[in-house]
Image (cartoon, rainbow, N blue to C red; front, top):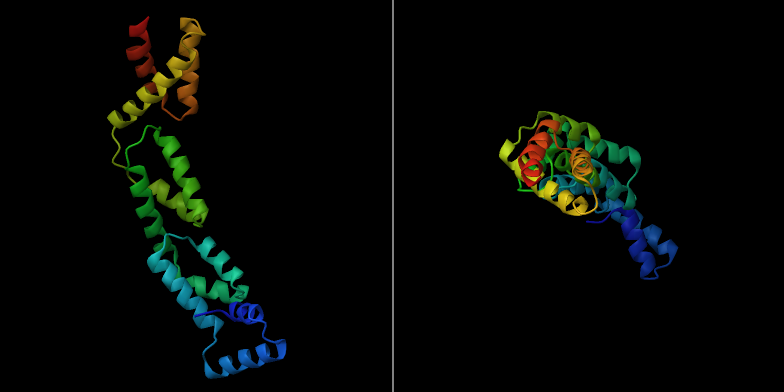
Length: 195
């Protein structure tokens, strides 16, 4: 299936004269073989069922195919908030439950960015992030802070005094989104043993 614009561009590419193009388009519309409404309905339905694209990316795709804005708004109504919520929740669980060496906050920020790039609206993303419960225990977060903290220690160890090293490591870990109590635990267990 093609949109009217796609068909016109195809015929122009094949060097068909404009008068014939108009005639072909008119005839196909009369026969019911060229219908932008049916095309956009089918495209949106297919994208909902088979892709991880959000409404904004689907809207962009429809605009590129020459579909009118009023028709786009109408067909995107089938991509309800609930459907988007389910898709975002599934993607969020998959991404956040994977093992990582980043803080939970960094993971959430990266998730939000990924979902925005996939075309989901900020409203849906915020709702999911606020409601989702992640199977991440403190041990996972501590392993991540040890990984990041050791990198910071090796970076500053030879350049800084003990006090300055602790301050730089604390600041670096805080910037990476780790909670203060976990940072202090890392400093106590890791750096205080070393000095």
